[in-house]
Each structure stands twice: as C-alpha cells, then as structure tokens.
Length: 156
DNA sequence: GCCAACGTTGGC
DNA sequence: GCCAACGTTGGC
Image (tube, rainbow, N blue to C red; front, side, top):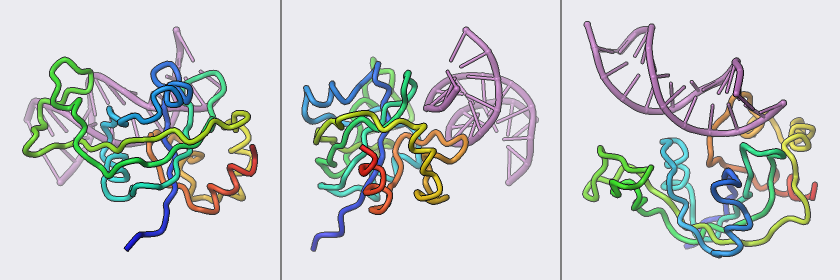
C-alpha cells in the first residue's frame, strides 16, 4: 500500500549547500540535522517520492529556489559517528542512533526565486499553520500542505 | 555584523 | 523538574 504523497520544505544555506550543488550531485544525504522536530519529520513523516521545496536561507534573497524529491527512507546520519565531523555527537551510537536523515534527489530549479517577501505577502492564503512564516521559526525541515505547495509554486 | 527567537544543556 | 546560561538560526 502506498500512502499519499506528502510535501515538505527544507532549508539550506547556499554557501554550504545550494540548489546548484544538488543539481550537480543529483542525490544528497541530508546530513547534519540536529533538531529533534526536524528529525522526526524525516524519520516519521517522509516517504520516498514526497515533494520538497528547496529553500535558501541566510543569504541575500532568502526564498524557494527549486524542488526536490525524497529519495530514501530515513536512516542513521553517518556524520553523528564521525569524530572528525562537525556533526559528531558523542552521545549517539550505531546501536542507538540519535539522528536520522533521508536522501534528497534534485528535481528542478525554479525559473526564479520565490522570495520570502513574496511568501509573506501571501501569508493569508497560506494560512496560520505555515511554519515558515511564523515569527521566530527556525525549523530547517517542515511540512507543507498540498494546497500550500500548489499556491507557492504558482507564484513562480 | 547584529540581535531576537528559541532549543539545549547542566547545575541545583 | 526548574530555569539560567549558552549556542545556533536566520532575517535584516
């Protein structure tokens, strides 16, 4: 049985990993997420084939720059076991991994950036439940409804 | 580069 | 289990 396709938004700092980087490598293990809520979305919510809005944060024009697809089920983030990694977590172990990730596959680049400004301008239509535009929200992985997905991409 | 927001840590 | 201190995120 296949569950209904879900939608997500994932943030990345373009200096660290941009939509162009994803286009080059095609598939990227989404490592380094060290927030429990974000982890839970990946671990418990994501299914292969789900849609992802790729969002550039912490840059000149923050906004949605492309789409991607969930390409694997959740599995332990290997960087948590790597002492040399910035993402090393001494409290995690292969027997009891704390952090999970999914593989993210490039889908397409948008013809233009859907800037945060524009997204905010449509806050009413997107609804109060949209985590991205909620004040102070710093979640790097968040759910998007089918209606929000449609609305956001219609702005392209 | 600043700083508000907010999650996590650790002392008690 | 509380909560102050601290670190990080991310818009501006």
